[in-house]
Image (cartoon, rainbow, N blue to C red):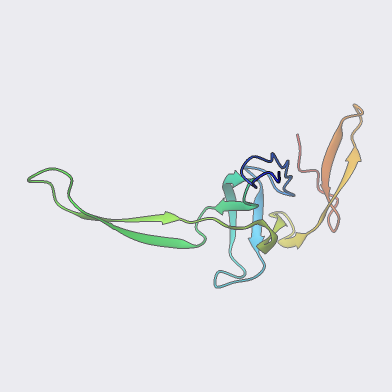
Length: 117
């Protein structure tokens, strides 16, 4: 019998990590720069600070409490973001190289800036 999609464990890998500075390259927030707050590799999505802002109206839960409006960052697809160099203000792809200690690190192709410490 065929297995359902939920039963299969698919290992996914993103080109970005939590804490990376990225620039949005497509969509309504194109050009915005922010830091990745959360990565969701199962869905290939990331949450970027200040990008894709949504508002949610919350009803009061208890008597006497007032309702409120919450704003939050919604996830966007990881293919819509690109690593960003704050020093030279340019977006770039990454490549992998080895540092002096022999550790594999991520490096921006355009600027040569090392992302991993």
